[in-house]
Image (cartoon, rainbow, N blue to C red; front, side, top):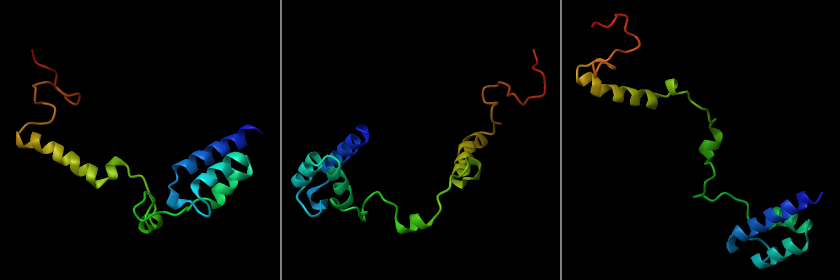
Length: 118
């Protein structure tokens, strides 16, 4: 029962210190620091509830309205058109040289069915 209020107080204290003076509401920043430290359980809760402007800035890192409405999905590499295009671009130098992939050094590839000649 001691660790949770202590963690909450530390979190609110650090959050208050990292908040700019313009983003604090109702009181100056130094007053919020004293409230958080003096009123051990109530101070951090009041800071988190009413002490800071909690809005996304237009230039912030929050998602835009278009991104919030769009479902984010992971795309497998074989379904990603950009990845497939990069593979085609990687193969062009070999095709322009007239060589088969894997035969540049005269070696054999694991797909060869013919035995090596001595």
